[in-house]
Length: 250
Image 1: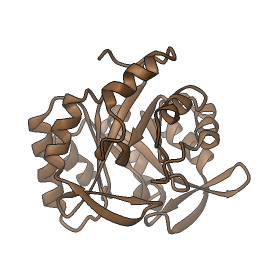
Image 2: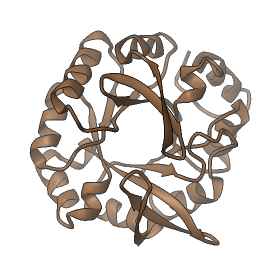
Image 3: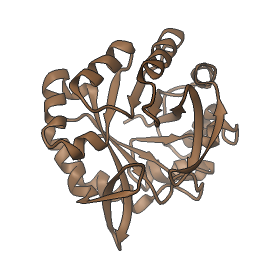
Image 4: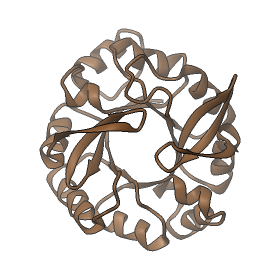
């Protein structure tokens, strides 16, 4: 399977921001401008995340404008709590919608979303944190609340519900730039048959190589290393090809 490279835009109050371990959020750039840059850089798709939820109309306007100004697929998450929210995001131009907290807080929501829109439109996003050796729980509220739900079992449940992909966010690795959590990604990838998007920890080229090979991830998502031009996506793809990791042609 061809591996994907996915830049992520965390959006708050109309701007792209970035933090570390879900904290210390700093302003980065204009989301429209950054999205255009990533399409030129040959990113495979773009993930847009509403991290504030304060002005939903403004966020949807940004999604709509990016969809109109670019041609690559948009995955969109954050603030999705109702069937109507999903419909609005898809109507704005998203190819897929990612659901995190609402899927945990509303037991029937994920299955209902799949039934209404089809599994190919729904991604289960899991914010996972290590709580014991080789044991991760799904967290909500920006990584502050432990649901005490086993992240591996939750991923399996999501696949049973019919979602098309798992977006696996490592809270421990987020923004640290010391590498993706390979153990976490291996555990989830082994437990499900649907694609796993690894998120959290990218800092160097070899981190992408490791998670897409040893970590068994189908895609790697990152933010700050792309935002601050620490890693160029075209160069990254050329690097991965040297290790026989299949990526979309550049």
